[in-house]
Image 1 (tube, rainbow, N blue to C red):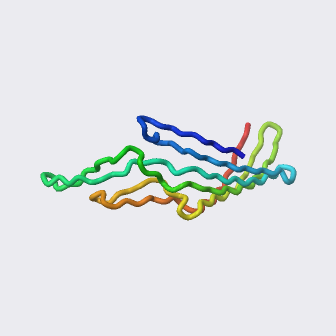
Image 2 (image 1 turned 90 degrees about the vertical axis):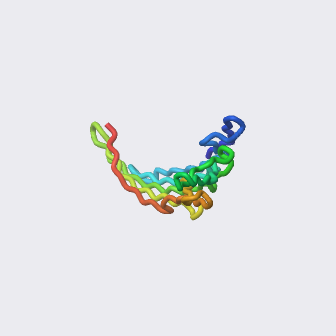
Length: 141
């Protein structure tokens, strides 16, 4: 288990990657020869971003972004659960490991960044995938 309490400030505002709270809980179990199963839970404060207003230019008929206070808003807090299963085969000179993983991010916890409407009057967070299955092989020489 780990807990991180920290602040990263630049010029009186939160820095770009400021996350005041991060919690990780990890468990792993070697349940048979060559087999391992693991579980991880991660919680982190949402990343800061700078909200925008729009400024219309009649000369060019375009909208330009006007930043508000730097990093004055935050994305939603982030949570993720990882489940991991692996099998290792040892050879004379090397080891081959195959693994399966599943990542689950609860709804509302997978905001990656903010996009804006053409005139910057509306914004929305772009979400990543809520579930991601993975599989792979690793060779250790």
